[in-house]
Image (cartoon, rainbow, N blue to C red; front, side):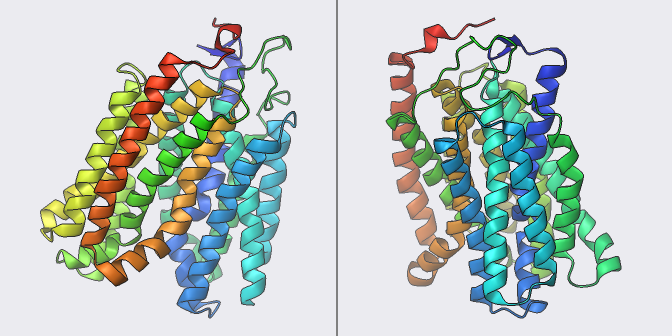
Length: 400
């Protein structure tokens, strides 16, 4: 394996890996405790439900879009600088969020926080695209992210004993402060369009966001939007299957933790069977689970399909990121695809709510079957075209 021509052994490899893991956890930190944030907006900040939902949507949308924009326009700025500046911005805005109560001010601060978190997302996505086997690295990154997110959720009650009901933002601040030192080990010379090795003549395979990359990002968006729609209403689906609200919420937490198995499996398999068939298998599994969850009310099926759905999501993400890295090892494509995934978390609650309100839960299943079929067709075309017409400068990149 190599990182832009430098062997993937020794300190360089592990410095990039660990710093990227920390940056990815920073990017996902708010998403993990989003339910607690929304609850706090309503109960402590005294916002309405719609106002609270808007704040969450703005932060996650800012996160996803800033990652995409930075990947598009940033060129030779150090990943270390980008991630540190973004994280410091997120820390300051989160600290101010603790004392903010006005809806407009909270909206502004969380939007700024999302932009800072998006810088970390861009860095984590782009840095690992340099690896010879990025799929495995992305799988490992998701394993760390899930374990960190679960730990953060369990930390909430402990922090609440010291700060009271206004606990979500202090918890976010603690998490950001814990992760920030790990960013400092990112190599200073690593940036988009710049080699990580000492030999600055080593080329980086780069295309200016080809149409294929946009198609791949759109495919990721479609598939993730369907799963995020179901995730947003998983507690409702649990109560419909016969659980009380407390049991349904507990089950969702268990499902989130079990989802680590998907990333573990992707890490173990890597590209041993290529990228196409693992991804197709994951999408088919997700589609079937969505159809069952939205049309059946059996409690056992709910538990099995909920776990399988979320595990499948985290199983396919490394392969989508690996496809993006194969198209453009500068990391722009991976940042674009990673942003497309997190953008669904921002828009799915609202879009899914509209569909359910007007057409019923079964309409989510129908939409998933139809749109995922389109996504599969797009993915098959992408895979075939990538093999038939690899990036023009692929041969120029040394493989050591």
